[in-house]
Image (cartoon, rainbow, N blue to C red; front, top):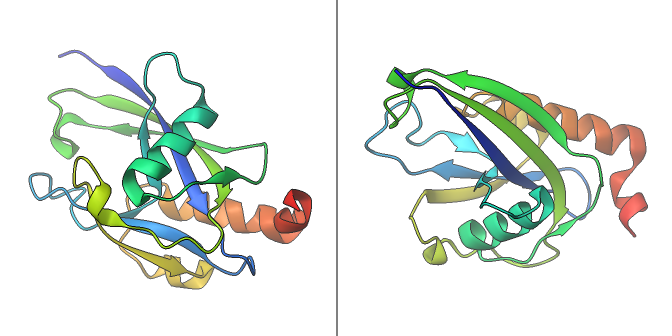
Length: 159
């Protein structure tokens, strides 16, 4: 069996009051381990693009909103997905690179998602995210993002 590595560029929209983040719900009926789980918008990098370009592209593709990175240092996590947990027939290491982004007052439009990977979205506080059924590492990334917001006043930095 062959193994693979995927580098994923993720965007975590932060509300204007810094109290909520936007998560998406994964639509993957062929994969019960992922289906209806909450996650950050994003996906694999295209060959030749920077992580920052990938974040902006992925947020546009999945949510149809223009994102601006509001903090220059991403939250980085890594996980192993075993072949029985994915739609790939191999073990895969996933490197998640998540940037905090601003989407202003734009309203996401899921009808433009080319792969129909997203079935819903919502704005959630840190506490609400803890009650959601999330993909691995989502809650950890959200917690670290809120720590950055609380410690560094991210919105003050970006304005």
